[in-house]
Every structure is written in C-alpha cells, then in structure tokens.
Image (cartoon, rainbow, N blue to C red; front, side, top):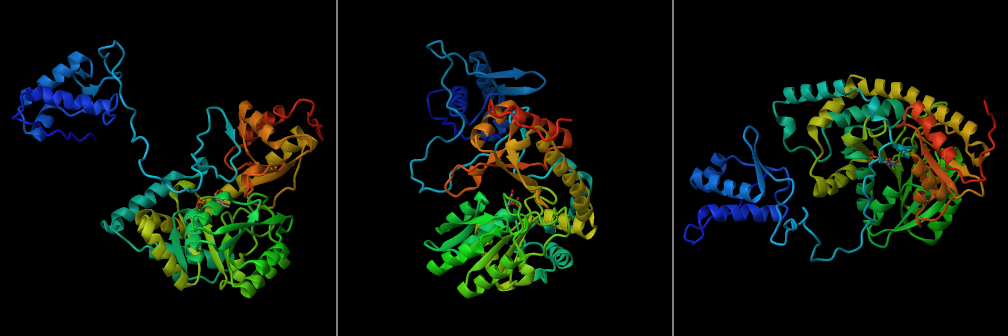
Length: 493
Ligand SMILES: Cc1ncc(COP(=O)(O)O)c(C=O)c1O
C-alpha cells in the first residue's frame, strides 16, 4: 500500500493543492507509484494529511487534467497506464521501479541464479522435481486450519529454533520405523528444506581454508553452501559403485578433510547406490581422519526395485549428519526438511539457524505433523511412488524406441531421474540447446561438475511430467539430435 509521505508546508507560497499534486507526480516519476496503482479516496488522504478534502479534490482534478491519473467514478482513482507527454512531446521520464545500483561493494559470492520459469510450451525434464499436481491439497488445508484453530494463537508466536516438538517427534518415529535410525526428538532439527540443513552443517563444520570433499558429478547447491563458509572444495569421482572411496582415502592422507558430502542412496545425478564395501570403508575413514559425513538422503522413499538401503547414519550415527526432506516426498514449496545428529550438534546448529532465520513456521510444522500422524503423507508417498515408477518405465521405453543408440544408460533402481551418456559424435550441450528450441529442456553433465567442464551426459528428470508429456518430450529430444546422427532405433514398432 502506498504511504503518502509529503509534509505540506502551510507557510510556503505555493498553494497546498499544488504541493500535493507535485508530490504525487514525484512519487510516480520515482516509481514509488506504478501505473494502475490505486490512490486513496479524497476523504482518506485529506484525513491523513490534515488538510481540507476540497484541497485533495483540487489536486486530483489537476493531475487528471494533466493526464497523470485517471478517475473511474465507481472504482476510484488510479495512476495512468502511461505518463503524460512532457514539454518535448515525449512522455515524462519515469524511473523504473527498483533501487538501482549500490554505492558499496559486495565481495564475490555464489553466482546469482534465477528460478527458471518454463517458457510457454517447454516441457521441463527437471533434474529432481516431484509433480506437485499429485498433491491432495484438501487434507493439507484442513490440517492447517485445524491446528491453527486449536492452538488459540500459540502457533503464530515465536517458537523453538529446533522446530516444533510435535513434528520432531513424528519425524523421529518415522525414521526409527522406516530407516532403522535410532533417533529421538532431541536428535532432530527441522529446517527449511534439506538446503538449509546442508548450509547449517557447512557453517558449523567448516572454516575458511578447510577442505570439504564432494562427489563429482554431484549437487551444485551443496557446494555453493559450503563455499560460503570459505572452505576449499575437493571433488572425488563417482563410478558405478558410488563415491570412489580409495580416491577419498588418498585425498585424506594429503589434506586435513573436515567433511565429506555424499548422496549415497540415489547419488545425484547418477542415481547409483554406494556399494556395501564402500559404505564400510567411508565410515572407517571418517573415524581414522576425524571428518564428518554429511549424508543427503533427499529422496529415500523413491526406491522402486527392492527395498530402500538404510542410511549410513543408521550404521554409525557418531560420524554422520543425516539430512532428509519433505520436498520430494510431498511438496518442495513447503520448505520443510530435517537434519539428524547427536543432540549437542543439533543444539549448536539450531543456534546457527537462529542467527539467520529465528525459527521455522510452527503452524505449518504442526499441520505436517498431523498429516504424518494420520498417515496421509505415507499414503501420498505410496501413491506417487507407483506413478513415478510408471513414469520411469515410460521414459526408459521412449528413449529406447526413439533415441536408440544415440544414448546409453542403466535403468535406475530409484531416484527421480535418469543419467544418460550421449554417444560420441553428439555434443550434449548443443543437443540440449536444440531440444530447448523444440520445447524440451534438460541439464547436461556440465551442470554437475565443479569446474563447469563438458561431460557427455544428460540428466533427464521424469517425475514432474505425466506419461504423455514424457513421450512428447522424448519426441522433441529425438528431433533435436544433430543432423546425420538420427538414432538407429532398437525397435521401430
Ligand atoms: C541432492 C539434493 N539435495 C537437496 C535438494 C534440496 O531440496 P530441498 O531443499 O527442497 O529439501 C535437492 C533438490 O533438488 C537435491 O537434488
């Protein structure tokens, strides 16, 4: 709402109504008032300014006559869509809204990214996004309403930076039941998504000059969070068995490693699962070298073939900070994730959290706790898991039929995307650009490297598109293959 800030000067020679009119013009020029903004009624403005209503009417009449504002008898008074012509005949210059450039200098930080709104008609094979069209919003809305009503306002106040106790209990119980993680409420910190959990772990563990080891290919947003702590990032390769722990051991001998970030269940982006032997070795190395393992288990439930693998944290919670999220299993927009660690660590991380975010959203946390207690979340996961598995199969089938030997991949046992190698002779980045022009977008291997290096891979997320959209997207991928490199399909039926 526009706040009128002029203090009229009764001693000045200019009439009051002209002072008022000029001040409104000034606010339009500076972009404080935008085309189409509603101005207050004459009575309201006169009351606020302590002037006669006739004065405000005279100012509005003057501005309307000059073309700065328009008055609709029934609807009110609005800033005109375009400023009136100035003395030169061209419209008066109006500064664009916003504050312009700072006069101070910001030291370099992570490169600014913007949320990519899909262009109209472009099918986004987003790397790791669930389909929020599948969320039943009514149970969520009802739970929110119920908890707010019952709380008598207490959920609208300040609360515990560790998160609402009821939700921490519900999460701990869920983890004990489904992930063999012997956690209780005091081991759980509720965060805004796993991203905040990753950033808090980085903040607490790392100091400028420290080393954190990450998987490559891997998850860039985690690296950006660690870089903010001033840590050096060392990439260790991932192969079919997950993180190359022998390579990690060599790094740990040379360098004091403080933390290792892994996605061992469905590695992002390759979807491979860390082999048993490597799991044991990683935990051993943590003890030998004194580093913490930050385990990001962002999509634990979406394991389609066989049972999910239990987290590293269930084998040895003393060296692991375990991170989970409701972003993939329910909805990313709720921004609810969690971190599990010994209670002393949880308390310290909660203090870091308080410094930037005070606390979470207690009403939403209570509503989510209710949905977990009522098994609504668990039902949702069972339902969408079947849908995602079917989508995975449709994508695999469409790729085999339409792209043939232009790509090769292993069918992943879980996760929400496929990691595909493009055949030699096809430039993955050019193919992605051509696909985008034809209406299908995906990330290439480059996006998952520390140094933004070319890699002949693509990550095709399938969860956020329905089966028909997936087939359509693959048709576009096929049409975007370079000329002369039309796929030899395995099955032309
Ligand atoms: C590997 C990985 N970790 C963490 C996240 C962040 O999820 P959120 O902060 O929404 O829980 C994502 C999101 O795509 C992810 O792919």
